[in-house]
Length: 452
Image 1 (spheres, rainbow, N blue to C red):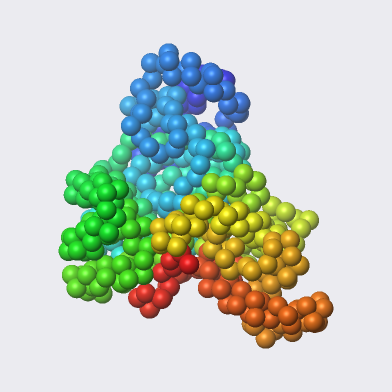
Image 2 (cartoon, rainbow, N blue to C red):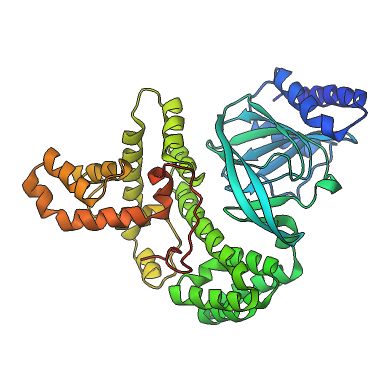
C-alpha cells in the first residue's frame, strides 16, 4: 500500500493553500481539485495499515468514533489527510464544523443533500425547523465532493453500500465560528449532537436507566416518564432518542407525551414526528444486520432516505438499466419478508414481541402483513397492486382478471387485510409516495408504531 502518495497529496495542497494565504474558505476548492487530479493507487492492505500504525510518527486520533477506523496519513498546521474505513453505515444527517473535501477511495455510497430552515431557536443546542431534501446521487470510487462548513454549508448523509467502504478526507481542524455542528433528525429538529451526547446530566440519567432497566424494567419506564419530561427540551429530546425503546407500550408513550406536554406545551409535538422517523429508520437500518446482498442493501438505503417512488425508480433504472424497477422492488420485499418469517420462528423473539420488548424490525413487520409464503404468486401480485396505487376494489378486480377467480375469492379476506396492513407500514411510505416523504402527522398517538 502506497502511503507516500498521501504525503505528496498533502504537500501539494499545503503549497496551494499557502498561496491563498491559508484561507479556510479556499480549502474546499483547493482540496477537491487536488483529490480529483491525484492518480492514487487504491489497493487496501490491512497488514500494511497495521505496520503503518505501529511505526508512524504522524499523530493519530483514536478518540474519534466517526468511522470504524480513522487513519491520519498527513498532518500540517492547517489541515490533515485522513482515511475513514467503514464496515457498517450511518443514517445520520449532519453539518460540518470544519472545511475540506472527500473522495471515495473504495466502495460506493448513496449521498443525499439537504437544507434546514430554522423556524424556532430553543437554545444553541437545539433548533426547530423543517428539513428539505435537495439531491441524491450514487458516489462511486474516485468521486470527489467539497465540504463547506457551517449552517449554510454541506448538510448531507452518506449511506455506505459496500463493506468495507473507504473515504479519503482532507480537512482542517474545528472552525469555532462554525460550531456547534448540528445533526438533523427529520423532519424538524437540528441538534448539537456532540454537546448533548456528552452532557453530564444526559449521560448519567441514561446510565441510570440502563442499570435500572436490567433490574426492574417497569421502574426504569417510570423514571423515564416522571423525571425526564421536566428537563429542558434539548435534554428531554436527547434522552428520548437514547431510551425510546423503554416506551414500546402504547400506554407508556402516551403517559410520557402527556408529561412532556404539561412542561413544554406544543413543543412536544415535535417529539412525535422525530420519534416516528427514528423508529422508521431504526426498523429499516436494522435489517442490514442480516442482509449481505449488495443489491438488497442498496434497496434498503433507498427506503431509508425517504425518497418518492419516482426518485427510487430513477435510481434503480440507473443501476439496473435492463430490469423493471417495480419488479425489483417486489422481489426484494418478498426476500425481506422471508427474513421476517425466519425470525418469527425464534421462540425468544416471539416472547419479546408479545411482551412489547422486540426491536422495530422491518422484515418482521413486513412478514406480519403478508399472509402468504414469499414464493406464493399472491405475494407478488399483492405487492405489485400496492406499488401501482390500487385501492382494495381495484386490487381485487385486477387479481380476479389475472388469476383463478375461485382461488382469489377464497383468499379475499386475507388479501384485503394484508393490503390495509401494508399501506400502514411507515417503512413502505417512500414506495407509496408520489413526493419526497415528509413524515408529517397530527394525531399524537395513532402513527407511532409498536410491535404487534
